[in-house]
Amino acid sequence: MKPPEQVLRELVRQWIDKAELDYHAATHLMEASDRLRQIVVFHCQQAAEKYLKALLVRHQVHFPKTHSIRELLDLTSSVAPAAARSLAGCVVLTPYGVDVRYPGDLPDLLPGQDTEALELARLARETVLGELKTFLAGD
Image (cartoon, rainbow, N blue to C red):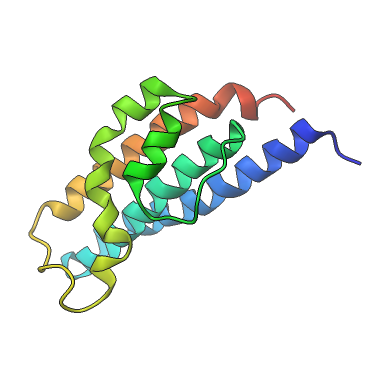
C-alpha cells in the first residue's frame, strides 16, 4: 500500500499532466494558425483551471466542479495567497472555458486576445509549478 503522501503526489501529477496537455495544445495551435483563436483560448482556460486544481489538490482543499477561475483563486488564496494574487488576472480566461465553445455566446475574439490568454496560461503554469516544485520532488 502506498503512503498517503505518495498517493497525493501522484494525484497532483495527474492534474499537472492534464494541464500540460492543454497548455501545449494551446501553444501548438497558436503557432499553426490565427484561425484557431477560439480553440487556443479554450485550451488556455483549461490549462489555468487544471494548474489551479493541482495546487488545491496538493493542499487538500476541496473544490467544486467549476470552470470559474475566480472561484478557484478564492480557494487558492487560503493556502497560497501570493500565488492567488499573482494569478488574479487569469479571471479573464473564465468565459473561454464554456462560452467561447458555442455560437452566439461570445463575440468573435480580437487579434491579440489569444496571445494574452496564452501569456496568462504560461503565468499560471510557471506560478503553480514553482509552488509545487518542492512537494513534487519529495519522492
